[in-house]
Length: 287
Image (cartoon, rainbow, N blue to C red):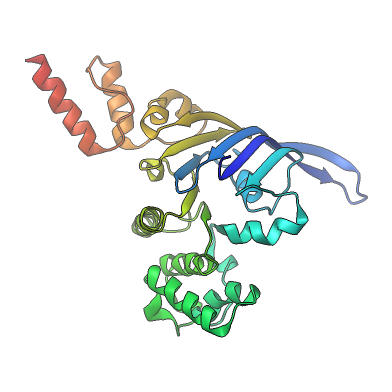
């Protein structure tokens, strides 16, 4: 069995008027089948309104399916007795770190989760210090979160999740509020976390370049998964990705345009270095 698995997952938002009568139903997730192996790094891409965040909330048992099933490490998310275990297993980092910070001091904020697990003071101290060191936030342990930059606040949110010792972390648009430098810094850290700590990462974003190094990519549109596979295979579908509101990386767009002009390049080029190599190869082969 996969570590995380959804089968024919569907979720509907019901809109009601002031008297409680149903005004409309929106099917935000529609028949999603998803399989995630332990230790993998997958990306879920989609424009705003595609259903990717609604899907994410199911993986942490914050929403329950209208139809279908979701299991996390063998646990059914609709089993109320397993909710806490599921959230310990699959932690979540949201777009706005301010919504996830609860402590007035950095170390207090990181300690919040372990304290709610009923751990001993010694174990809490160990987890707090370990998580702050792992995220590079140990120098800020006595600071107020309000004094931190956006990137530092996001690292603090990650430290709070790490202190719970999860097997998986779901990042829901975790870099959306950061500048390009902050985005690159957080993404680089998360990739290292996946490689060195073997934590499963589910990275949800609309920035396609953030998915380049993923083990697999899933693209959502109108609540459905419309593309899936290795990054280069998915990114080669330039017209489809553009039509559903995603911006492909510059190297992918350039290579696509060059191929249309007859230049013999491989499809699905992901970065400028690879594009340069392909152009040199094409030039040498033409001589």
